[in-house]
Image (tube, rainbow, N blue to C red; front, side):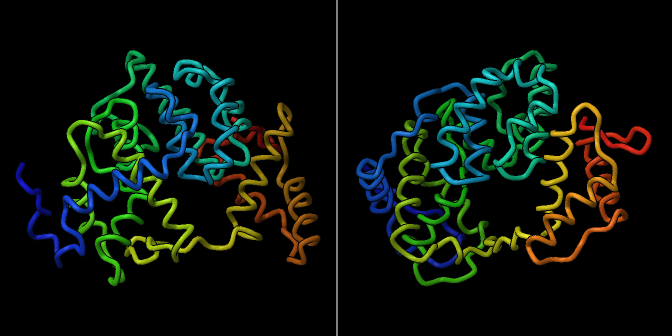
Length: 293
């Protein structure tokens, strides 16, 4: 059997030979395998939900919320037909609310196109909120189709094992290596092995993904504009069907800010928050009040 080699033109030679690296990943993947609930299905809709949730928060938190989501919206048709407010309510506590809107809009797009879940990478990436990693994850885990699934745990393995001493490694150097290493047969198993090894490495060594050029340190959430947006969405959900005024939003936010030792929020800022959320499709203005869309 011919020895496989890394593709040429990808910068300095990786620290491990390709066959050695792949054998190591398979062995460690078997040893570290995590029997997670979303790994017991080939349903592309259910896998899509797990991929989006796992991009937002830790595995331990997704285990439970994923099941709750599927009980509420068991199919892509159920999600498409649900009121947007119900989708947002179920998403609360799972990170960016924009993701929930994108999920809902993508489900509507799929249903309007006939209801069959796309398999083609380009078709998947055309859906609202679906980027290259999400599309590759759906294709790998639902359809066992090869592709470049480059997310944080996969990136961790490639950086730690192939570029142990380099800083600022760009994804354009990793993409051809991830593509070359991906097998033609057990794509699903291969990426599970990479994910589990990457998660293990993060616990054992300083996070190698910080040496990626694409690594971005998350800004503080407490007191941020993002936190206030999330609070306003919760207010809008709680105030259904009557809605909230800018003055009510300002008063509620001010109470929380003062309790945390920060500055008060005025009605003008609250109005800008509501207008921003309205422009993105979260809510609509009716008179002096805004109601959840």
